[in-house]
Image 1 (tube, helix red, strand yellow):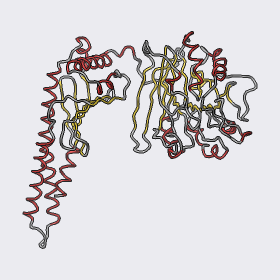
Image 2 (cartoon, rainbow, N blue to C red):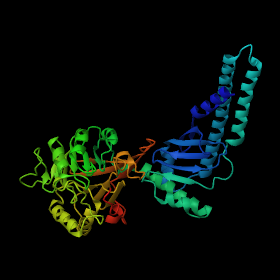
Image 3 (tube, rainbow, N blue to C red):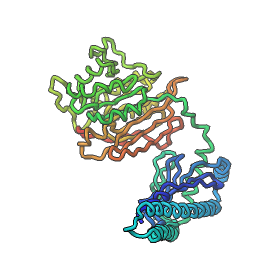
Image 4 (cartoon, rainbow, N blue to C red):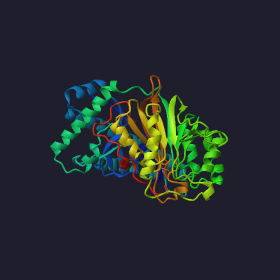
Length: 490
């Protein structure tokens, strides 16, 4: 019995089948030991819909592998899809898959069961004809269970949507909870299909990213050295912009523990956060890091430049950085200087006074605390820059990309998952951002990727925000929307 069950369940999990529909190709497979559901997933945009319509504890996966371009063009031009035809094709494809799957499960289960029966036969034990009959009987029961419990039953009228890709309109999340009539729901889904079709068929507004330059944006490691291999893999030998809070206190001991972080980026560019210190900055500069401050990078002796030179070249970009006003000081025994109210109005004005003459002469600005941007964003809204300007920030432990006009704010989250061992008590994922850009005719930001990794399970998601298309007309860079004022513990 155990052998037959193992063979049947193994075949159930491993057998998959490709089916061709008029709109593209789908891959059908089954994942055992899940709450019963029919799961339709589109990897192209990382978007799916799930129906609780299967009584067996398995998930029937329908993955869209390819999309027929002619069908996409018809949807884009006419705004409609022959849904009944596609439903009929999908129903036939699922039925064909079920027939093949049931045969594979029956044969695999029976064969493994018979092999086990032959292996355990003995004169003192059950006769082979009884054990063989048991194997065949259990295989038949498996088939009956699949036939009765696995096909989706009832109306598929309670969809659960899930989406990570930003290219699908965010109305999907609203659809799940809204109490609407079936007619309105159909209209909404038609609109989503038209939007998806135009996304695929009209790529002229988007440049290819194949040869785009890349750099990594990270922050808030908080001594979690276990996350350094992840940062190393994502950086892949390219530039790393680290936007503060590499340590918890900035002490010399912490600096020695994190010596190898400098080698993770070529170059490793750093600005201080409220958990870093002047001692740490000098230590990183001596080891070869590009430690930026208001006057420019520290020298190898740990001292600021004699002549202010705030803008430096990194991977063809003009980069500047502004150290955190709450940086810890060796002279004060590295005490916490952070004010829970965040940067003061005077701090924000000083930052704008520093930034204003650099607008148009800098491409990327590093600053740890998003609230430092409050005055600057208001001024940039009143006088929009002529060239793209990207702010790399941290502190909040929340990943995001926000845009308004030519101004973009990128926060990778917390690369240290909130701190060593997650001692903050919050379930914080490992977060890293990548900026894709070109510098052929000046700075041209193309996309920002947000990578999130669950430190417990290792599962990960990635979200891409295209920066080479106009931002939404109603998009505004509100400092509060960037994460608000974080506590001194972050």
